[in-house]
Length: 412
Image (cartoon, rainbow, N blue to C red; front, side, top):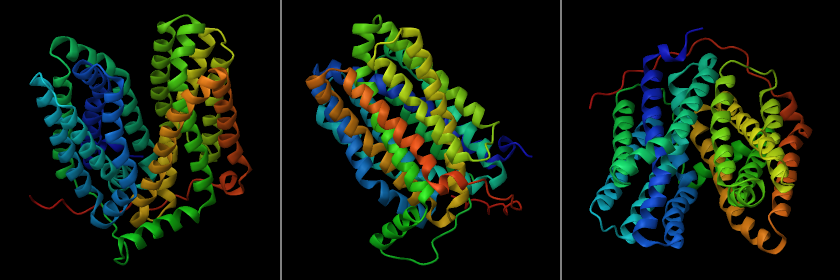
């Protein structure tokens, strides 16, 4: 079997995605520090984050339609160039020394809109440059690269902020998007357009019907959405429990580091291990996230919580490449971006709900109860997919002949 990195198109895609992942990993810490330095207000930070999140959520399905209609590569290039411009604007604003909250919020909203069009292109790009037989390893390589970037990102952000200020972190992110767009522009990606042109509403409904027609897919999405909502509860309440009951801030930092290492390890395992029942295996592994939630709720020893969190995030790192490979094999190419957009919509949509409900519940009943409830919900939702016959039966498709190479990218 040819290694995916021996394929020129995937090699350039992998390099572009790795560079942009490194840039993105630097931004969260820089954004928080920049806004707090400029305003001294956590409400201002929440406003900037919401300005990015809302258009991303609202426009994800539209982004899926665009990628299916107009070629995922072109949509991804335009999205990368847009995000390059917005991050450069933020960087220049911060370097000027007197940033405007309005300008930061508008730039975040434009960047969130571009992200709504970029996210659905991820799966079609891989499917368009890598044959079916190689996709699990290709997805695992991309997952490992993204997780390694998350592991190195905070350290790089700290060095940049300490040496030159948060503005340069955004300049670096802008440069990473420029590199990604350039590499995407020169590769050839197979594109299977929809068989007929429909209205936007009809295209959205057609994508939704494809989702509803596969019980294994939408039942798993319910589990994945519950996982994301529970993860928001842990991220919101976990620091307080770690500081107050487990030994201090160092415990929380260790948990985050263990999670990053676990996700990297899980992605590497996914590149080597091909379970016979991929969705069932991955969903059952994902149910392990209940362990750190419940252990935090009962204030278990810090070492136990850290190890449990690392294992749970390893399950997530394993699930992502396996899930993406199965989706790429089970849906027609001309609806893949729309299906991916609905997948992201469910995952991202549950996160703000967890952020909103966790502090309210903790205020009334204390942190242990919402953490424990979230743990039980994750266990039931993820492990409960084993009750769905299609989840239990779904196997890898039979090997297919290599797909024809895509035509050369048009000259620019």
